[in-house]
Image (tube, rainbow, N blue to C red; front, side):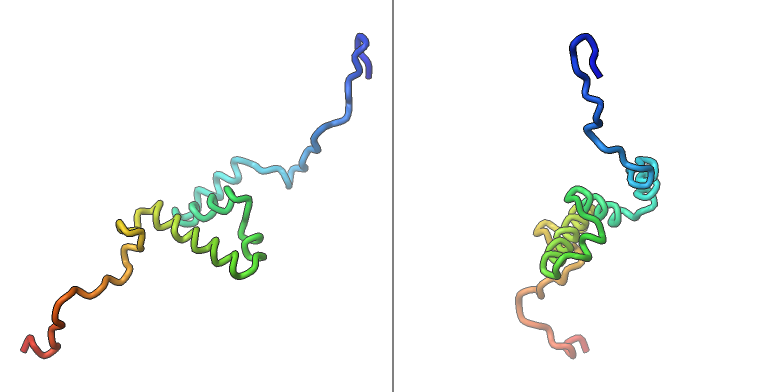
Amino acid sequence: MESNGVVLDQKPHRIALNKDERPDAGDEFLKVSKMTPAERIRYFFLKDRELNEDKLAAMNEKDREAIEQQIKEVILQQLGLEDEDGKPADAPQPAPEGDPVPVDATR
């Protein structure tokens, strides 16, 4: 097409997605709103890295375990379930120093 000596390109530069492929913000909101806080953190962790559960499952075991560990750490951190050392709050604590008390010493 030509208009006042200027040629207008009529070819689309992008291909429109059909309705099934188009992400719908409303659908995503409803999906995310039904998730637990930990599920939400996991979902957005994967989404930020252009991953999903299917892509994660298709990874080799070493890479998948590394990502799962990262997800676990982020969940613990964001939910405030870590202590000052970055360990889970329910991690076993080392025994106090000093002489052990015999089991029958309370009798």
